[in-house]
Image: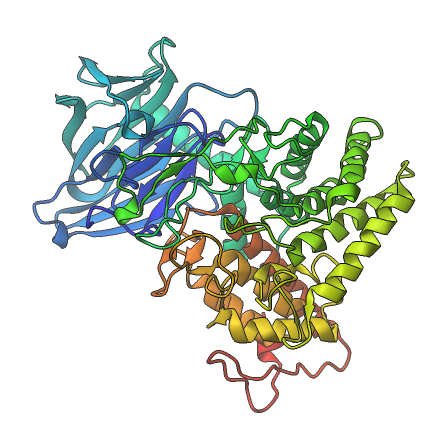
Length: 637
């Protein structure tokens, strides 16, 4: 069990087609290639013995005498792990040069540059790949002291080193031991290729350093498009880079997370594969990307989504399904990898995702909003395909489904699904007028109004004084934090404020928010889960828009303390403040961005109001408001 680092003890690097996790000890313990959703080459994060890894660390007689720190080069995806040992200070820079455009590539290069900045440091390299999630054997050849080739099923991994780093076979694995003094550097390059594609060009140390600079310049140049200049620039920039790293450049499709199988509860069964594109998650990112100035990324996904709607190629037979592979393939067959023990014994480890076959009607609202928020979606292909989907939805929206949280406990009449049905028709009706497009106006209006009446009459619970998860329960659900965001009601509406108060009393724990209570609303799975980071940031935004600025800012500041050492978030926060679930999660970083922008907007508006008294909210969750009514907390920078 001690072989598994905390989930949060990682940084992520990537080339916009695949991504790797590097632990704070300098171990690459997760990498799939040639795509995010390809079988793994390194997966010791899911099985320390069978998964495979590549470590490049300082080699000291007593590791306890060494201090290790990890950071990103500012505003880039170059990850630096520093080793402060008794005899010197060394560091390893890990990166992948982004493949920003073009067709999918078979070659993917992970570069590790070691150097010493003080004294003398010995380094140890251990490269132990395990192909196909550790299921496949491989052969090893070592053509010379600076080149080794691991031959797995359909894939080769080439390991190349620069002068001073001699590679040695150790069984079917490769090791090296070398020493550097102040000012010296060396590089190890891992290149994944398809079988038979030949030997990749050998990189000299100068080449590796030039690649590092090219990677740094790419990210700095890309970030210049960001228009955000608010109070939380570092956090927003890191989140934006993370979202970009998790986007498959050839199609513009973002994935939910870089990993699979990491548990929502250590030792539990909630271990899912998140390396796919969820229509919901990606659609909700479009407006945030546009607001940040990243129009190219927003439009690329809109085109991908439009293609899915036009193709209507799904495994379910419905116009859309909730998730796809990054190339639009709808088939995500789920299998259990029985040979892997799972992160700290969290079993089963699943590859693929059976939830792709679920009916989740809310996706049509998110998709319609994403397609329309960026402007006209096209007179022929785009609009025609969307109208067909809306006509289908007008006949199918009023039925139980599995809901936003992909529960496996049976279909229900989920309020959130009805809410997004309302969004789908509302956005389409507005767009048809704004762009003078033909529309089933009467049909769509009837469906929109019927969904509205249902939510008001059946989604509202008189005793709870709140909107609830589904029509047959009194359970609260954090997905409904989006009700004012999508414009269903005002953030100052008394019914909304009452719902927010109910959530505050039941779903919120020290500013952290649970999705719902599984004990009160069984979801078909054993075990529990932590608070959901996505919902915690949605909560901040809802507080801010509702005028509860002190509470919102305090909750946001506290949420930021749960980020890991390089500013990344997993899906959930556990009982002891540990990060749980797949890592890093794109949806969480999206919600961080929207919460930051909402807070900036509302704080600026509060400062600009004539005669504003900056009234602070009552103390909640350990927060004590100033007794003098000062405005510093609400409007300060």
